[in-house]
Length: 295
Length: 249
Ligand SMILES: Nc1ncnc2c1ncn2[C@@H]1O[C@H](COP(=O)(O)OP(=O)(O)OP(=O)(O)O)[C@@H](O)[C@H]1O
Ligand SMILES: [Mg+2]
Image (cartoon, each protein chain N blue to C red):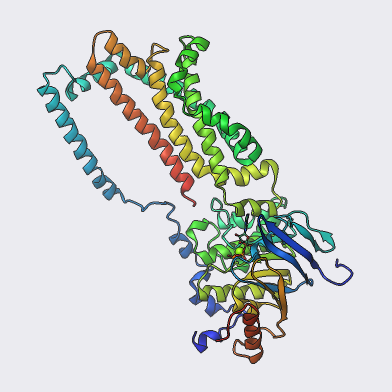
């Protein structure tokens, strides 16, 4: 420590000149505030760079399609349809007007099943995270149910709900409610204890504590859990539609095979499932990032 | 409102055990109204635990804390803790954080106090920034502003500047003293930095290793601003270092 530093005043007025040289104290400088406002966890990618970034994945996609085409041709067309045939099949579905119907049917079931799972799973999980006794009581049962694939519930679902929309909705609900509840409980467990202490210090309790502190503090981790659960829900709807109903993308795949070995339609259905799953994931990812923005 | 012997905060035979170890061992001390008391002690000796009990976040195993004559049995808005690790809410702006403790007040009063708190700690211009966009020092300033806005008469500060660089720490210390001189809150300020304690405090409590007991109370009879080369300053510092078992340079 230099003698000069040692003599720095530890009290007295913070003079204007001190404030001016201290970057901590950039008070009253609005432009300084503006420079900190790049609210993204990741580096901002300018538009041109974003477009350039599309290059490699497009090249990989084109390469794969080409390989697929060549392989399909080489096999004599018996093992797998060519990309062109699949594109035509998608066109055929669109032309007959069933493409949109099937997509909407699948999304409808996922929306209901997943929506109900969020409505029940989030409060349940928050409560499990908050009350250790509830967690201890329920956790073993939840852990026991968790490894049971939602597919294993199909017979019971059909027994209870018949061949109707209710069966897949029930299966999707089952498949997503547990991951959602577990994610919400883990998110509450992960809240730094100082946030809760500060909140109690300012007199918060009850519903206000939940809405003002617990929920926002748990939100980022909760959103990640929701995204993973939605991925599961989307896989389950396809499986459920193969058995329990007569519409939707899962039905399209089994029907195309059973009704005429139309493997071009089978692969078309698979591709559509992939694309829509990707879009759903991207949607929640965007939400997730906006939840992360401020932290 | 003080107890008969004039103490505003009165800590008696406070013990805390985290099984199987004892953390605090019959800690007793008093703090007068408007006094700035620093607590120093070795790392891990139980300083934060002491603060958590004083602030009412944690019940002691034995002993009692009375503030203004009343037994502490939970946190309260009239005594606000500032934490070792940043406890500003990352999902709220600086302004919203500072106004957080003012939920019951009228909108106008709230706005007035938020503006005053932000001004007091020199965060003007950053009202709408989120904590992750702030430096560590600015976050601690925001937390101090949040505590000040409640107009709490008692502040418990747990190494609030501990994670900051030397110059920022000096600056924040000076600013804290300014605020305290103007408003005369009762402050218990925990630190592991002996220089910091001697620069700030009216009185320094020295804790032993875990389980912590009060080894000594060192009164710092020096005016402010303090001359860091004055013999009395150096004597007080060396005395405390000695009490902590650190050999003199
Ligand atoms: N919840 C807990 N359960 C068990 N042990 C704990 C708990 N909290 C703290 N301890 C122990 O109590 C002791 C004192 O912890 P405390 O955080 O009070 O120390 P400190 O003096 O504030 O340390 P530092 O200087 O690192 O801030 C430590 O040995 C710690 O391991
Ligand atoms: Mg500590």
